[in-house]
Image (cartoon, rainbow, N blue to C red; front, side, top):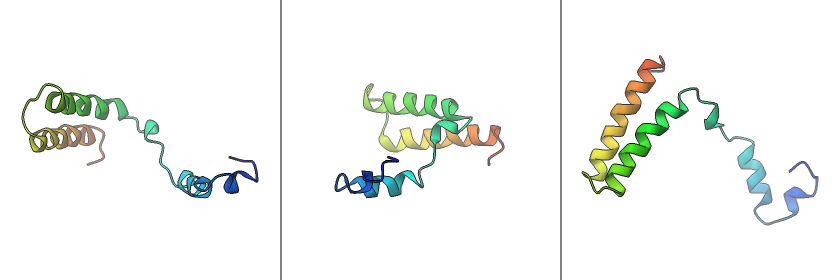
Length: 75
């Protein structure tokens, strides 16, 4: 990406460079694992196990994440 010719090497290269300049590193979020685990459980239960509705899964995820963010002092 630091090669001066990278931006013109492919039709999408400049857009990729522009995107990388503003991307946020979600791995740096200290509560990443605490957010990921309930998402995996809620989505798995709906998609794989066929439990509930999509709305119920997402509403439950909002409750889970709200609790995590409150515990982290971010809400």
